Image (cartoon, rainbow, N blue to C red):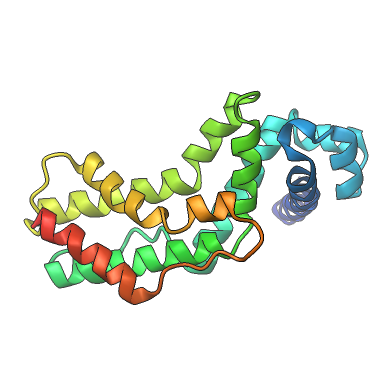
Length: 211
C-alpha cells in the first residue's frame, strides 16, 4: 500500500471510530455503562456488530476511547493541558494557574464530561475498570499538568514545596469542588463554572501558602 492509500485508509478508519464513539456516547448516557449493549451501540452508531468488533474488542475498550477522545477535544478546543506555559516568576505562575484553572472549569462544565461522570460513578462498583479510566483521563491529566507546572516553578525558586503531589491535590481539588459535586448530583440546571475573580482568589490563597 502506497503512502496516499495508507493515508486514505487511516482517515476512513478514524472516521468510522468517530462514528462509533458518537453512537456509544449516546447509549452510555442513556443506559449507563453496564446497561449499554453492543446491539444498542451498533444500532446507535449505524454499524453492524461485526464492524463494531473490528474496531473495539469490548465495551471497556470503547469507553476508554470515548473518554480519551473527550480529553483530546478538551485539549484542542481549550488548550487546557498546554505544557509550554511560563512559570519562571511569581506573576507568570499566577497567570498560568489562573488561565489553566479557568479553562479547565469552563471546559468540563460545558461538555459531556459531567454526564459521563455520572454514568461512570453509578456503574464503577460493578465495573471497577471504568472508574480507574475516569481517574486517568480528565482529572488525572489536569493533575499531571499542574504537577509539572509546580515542579518547574519549584526548580526556578518561585515556590517552596516539599510535597508537590499534595500541593497539586490542594489546588485542583479546591477548584473542582465548584463543578464536580453540583454537576454530578444536580441535573436540573446547567452547571456554571466560577467566575475569573473567584478563580484568582483561590489561586492567590494557594500561592500565599506555597511562597
